[in-house]
Amino acid sequence: MYGKDTVSPLDLYLDPKNPRFIVPEAGGEQADIRKYLITQENVLSLAKSIADNNGLMPGERIVVCIEDGKYVVLEGNRRTCACQIFLNRALIPHDYESRFPETSDALKENISLIEVDIIQSREEAKRFLAVRHIERAREWSTIAKMRFCYEDYNDGKTISQISDRTGLRISSIRKYIQNYKILLRGLNSDWTEEEKNKLNLLEIKPDKLLRMFRLADTTKTLKFYYDDSFILRSNKINDIDIDKIIHIWTRKAFIDNEMDTRSIFGTYVKGGKCTGAVAFIKHILDKYDNIELQTNVESKNSETSSTLQEDIESPSQQRRQQSQGGGPHNLPFFSTLDWNAVDPSDNANKGIIAVCVELKKISNSTSFINNYPICTAFIIRALIEQSLKYHARKMGHWVHIMRQYNSLNPQGGEPNLSFIIRQYMTNIASWIPDRNIRRLFQIVFNSNVQTEKLNLVVHSPESYMLTPDTLRAIPGEGLLEIANYLLR
Image (cartoon, rainbow, N blue to C red; front, side, top):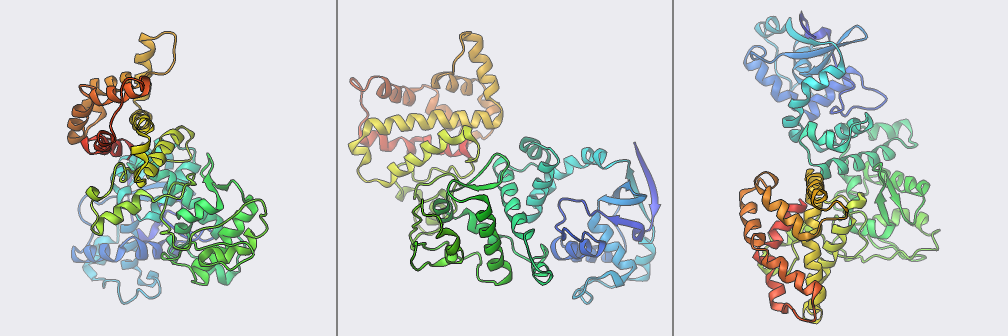
């Protein structure tokens, strides 16, 4: 049930529960929200537009709900904030007095009373506002997306529901929740009042801390992974020491300013000299006698999947390499295979990640394909099968595939690769919306020649072989581009 009212903007209450607003946890006061909106949400630009038009533009209605007898703004917090300041300039945060547009008498008169739409409950409002989130979430700051996804997840929403609501990719949502949980572990640990002031979310740049936990050297050396609840864990270090590491790096990033977005993990040598960010936590690592922690100081410190322990170059490094002059034609085999979007915390993804890692290693070798052509054919075929299964699960097509398979095979089991490809070919218009990829898919798989060649190698290596040169040509004939599409 919806209603309307005419009120003064000064009688509206900016929403302290809006997960998009990054305000101090202990505060959430109206002044904090106004400061956030001005510093992070471009209210100054909006205020200038309101001043130029002597009021709000037609159709710019404020949406509120009633909580504790107050009109809480659910949609239009930026406009409300600007109008409140125009009506009472004492509300301008410190350091912004000279930057906020002047208030004319005509403007004051036009915004002294505004119409608002009233929705009875916050839950009802969520349904009303969901469609707007899909378009606007893409424009939010990274920290706002992190907070929004974290709050929705804590409210019981599934990752798929959050994706449907916001339009954000599932892999991005997982990473946002993981990162925000690390950030909270750092900010909510034991700090003095003076230190807490320096850890205000309005002032810090979270990536100074969070980036360190995504570096390949950090993940590899500290054996980090994320559990099913998106909490950072380690196969070698206990949770108490992980908290200590987060606390120390939080201090170095935001209080002592000894870490920034260019900091490297560095080199750890037990009983020896350490370099980089690992030097700050040496006293914690020294007590772990059961593991050998050693990293290469020359490492590129790239971001990689949290469960991969292999010392390999990530796809993001390859893209940087290409942008500096080395195009794909200079990189052999499957060097530009990109599995960064595949969530390593999902057990169902371990197969495709393992295949991608192996193909990367083969691509970095100058002799593997010549020496082991049968093994190379096996893993190319595995890439086809695992990437299709990954895409089918992610997009919700796997249920249809299994239903079709079980209708023909009452005895059960898993469909083979040829059956999966046929299902994709039958439903290609809806399952692969990208026209170029669709055309490429039909070229590569329509006659099934490429797959059948690989099947022959797998099932009859004594009678059929693919030459190393033929194997090297397969990625460039369309399979690499299709795989990257399926894994994105």
